Length: 73
Length: 341
Image: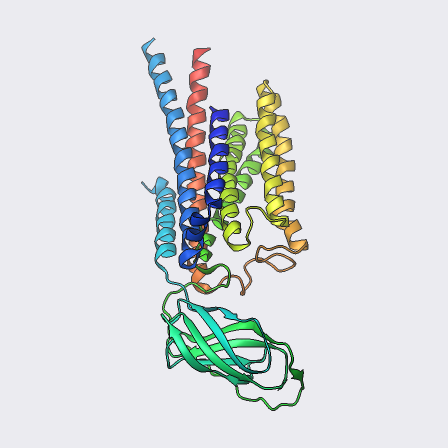
């Protein structure tokens, strides 16, 4: 689970950086007073936090299932 | 209800941050004047401003560093309120060769770009021939964020990037507090809190590094610059990753709790040195470093503070909330496993 998350993030970081190196996108980042630099940053903050919360949620569901199994047996 | 009030407060503060950061306009500013280097005599200069309202009633000046008018420009063309072509007649003898660009109107007030123009062949004389200064009309801006060259709108990142590091600092403080407690009382609850504090802190560190990298790319020009604070932050993350690995390497619970508690205290001290002390002793691109205390009057203005401080508290509360969820999960998990045995 952990290594999978790490691998995904590594791929994401590499991808985002190669995509952003693209000149058209780079132009977008500088346009309108660099507002998109802010939009991307704000988006990433929420994206990573939500991703982390989803992971926590999954772990919790697993715990709940285990608890249910235990009370049955 | 009241018991969980701090969570509501955290959400409200982050919502406030989001709203304010997205809706507050930027103050107008002067971005550039070209060419940067000119000769004496008649010169046509291209002025570009940001969020400004340049018009025919805007006055353009070249001044000395202390605000004495050296030349007043004659506007030849204004493009969409942001760009102006202005004709200047620059005298042969000047108080200084480096001149500030200043433009004034009743809506934007006085916009200054220090050291905007260098007059190559001017002879300097200290004679006080130039005495005129420009008055600032001080227009009412309402609630605006300051204009900073190079940053422009990305100054808003302050509430999303910088606050991540404050949240991290909180998580690590929480963690080290329980590590110290663990050394005293040897309870598994303290150990669990220390572990979860670091886990959540690392998430914030991770966000801080990515967002910082993006911000750096479009303001300083590179994904990673050789800056003490950046490298310090990276080392900090590595130190805490080592903490996680260390925990994974020890199977016996008591031993793991003690060893990782000792390591955590060491890691915390290293973090303070790397991200708080060292950047202040050398030059850094980060504001507030290179000898200056952070958040000096030059870095933050009152409007930015009115959003930044609530943002810091809001993100810290969100961090605390995630830690508490993780703690409760660990406790449930522990109950499950001990029950099985």
